[in-house]
Length: 294
View (cartoon, rainbow, N blue to C red):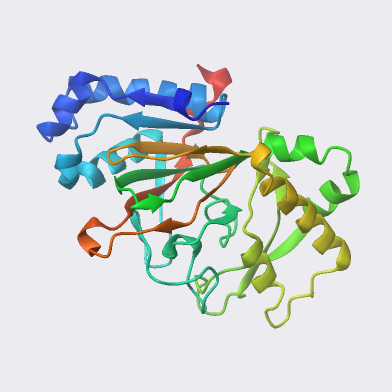
């Protein structure tokens, strides 16, 4: 599975429509259908992600509109927090993962910690997440991706580990719970979807914090062994696909199949040049993307 092979260029007609701010014309409609086909073939049935290229870095004022147009074409855009945020700016906010009650991985510049988006929330999880690169980091910040199928294959001779990972853990909510709700959500790391596909939800630090919350059970030795075995696969360079996004590239990921993270990055001191990506979470439209429905 090669990062470069997942790149696809927007059609010239669509790029012209973006420059004209026309997202309801024939070119946009044609690209909408092409985008759905690409997602079906690559994000659902293929590698689990794709990257669209060709947006003009000089037209960054169109980026959020393009991202929402794509997201709406693929399903329902989900709120990413209790404030209802639909497009989140992913940038270094000077925190560390798990800091305080609400700091998240996306708010830091640290690497590693491969995860899925929405690990802090109950089901339903985002089926897809998108990233649109506005500005890459000065150095570092490359994406690292690991498909859940590779993890299951590497742990196939450890049925005891897989069995534990299919049982519930406490995931910390990062302060996003409603008043009166528990500070954690219980769910398994590994599970199957309604159409019997293998899926994953994970961020180790959220589990560690969740099990330290009042009323939550301490992680058992068996649970720690299972999480350590899971992490050993994630941390093995042989498990990962790695690549760097450029300004103007828009990626769509299968959030239930792909764990992702990044390498540590160093940024420009000037905030106007610092690393910035836009992100959406999407609940898919099954009739549009099911491979047996086309």
